[in-house]
Image (cartoon, rainbow, N blue to C red; front, side, top):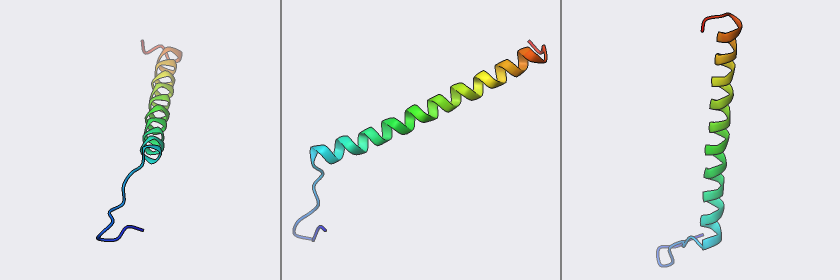
Amino acid sequence: MATKNQPKKFSDMEFLQTSARENNKVIYIAIVLVLVFTLVAMTGVYYEYW
């Protein structure tokens, strides 16, 4: 725990771990968006809207 005299410093490893977590979230969101778009497009083709 950091005190007033000793501020908490991010080490390189902690920064990389938080960065990796953020990258994973972005990848998962992109995959979900692609799946939703694909489902919408396939239902459009199935019901002959396009």
